[in-house]
Length: 169
Image (cartoon, rainbow, N blue to C red):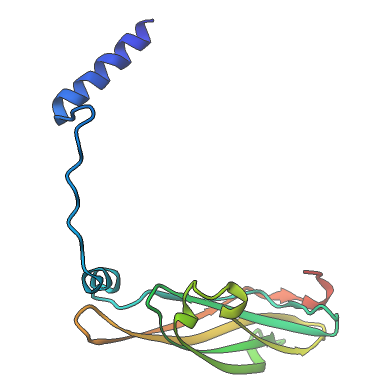
């Protein structure tokens, strides 16, 4: 009972201090135009995009390794150019590209208006023993709220995966 009394006093004090009234109508928020909303979304830095690699894995047929990279941008989208590479680690620890391909997407094709499979790009190579990783490098370009072009660079890779064809996905 004592705890309820203390809680009641705290809530009552908070209401008095903040001036909150029960059942008081909220003041309506002014309508914002489409341009105003876009300006707030875009901000000074342009559209936010991310590019992210998936670890290499065996394909459904079990004969190839697949390296996939995914991307997504906030609306209204951007111009995305990326290179997806499957790399193998050499005995000296250096990474060598064994398969690579360039991909491009623009506008709504870069946003969540498209499902994840439509925003994924892959390269393949025949299965072989070794340690492999996926590397994605690219850029995204859009305009900020002032109409200025903004370009951002992206470069990400996965950790090495030993013998990806021995792992079922």
